[in-house]
Image 1 (cartoon, rainbow, N blue to C red):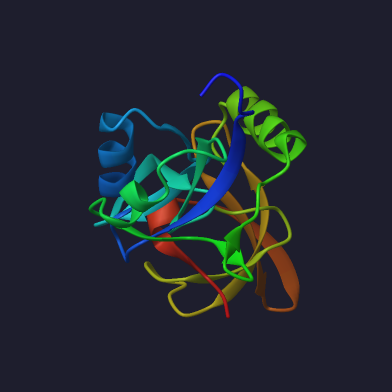
Image 2: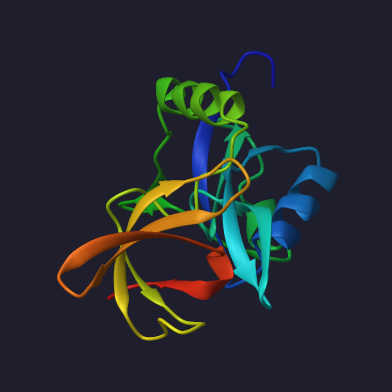
Length: 166
């Protein structure tokens, strides 16, 4: 194994089984990389920060040309190795290095709403009115601009009172 160079390959997972595939492959001794980003979400009316896969349903796996490719097909959670013309094509090391440097360095979660984004108010006396996000405060309050009687008024709202406008 030492005479062959390690390369990264892309692996497709079965639906909603990415974590299972990752765990099973690590148990077999494979090196796996799955870039994640932190995002803010509203779940059951509560504002929370969670991690989500950057490429849902896909994992990067490090292997050599003489690795046991067939072991991948029998692994729970794994669908297939992404290949072209029947042969797996390596992913450039520069791409993996760029992903690692970009997503390891970022510890701040991506904001739920961005300034300038259109939102729909879902709760309170302004329910069903459209507004524009002006800013997000450090305590996660959303400042929105709302047109009331032909003038813009700024209101501070909870993220649970808003939804993305279509």
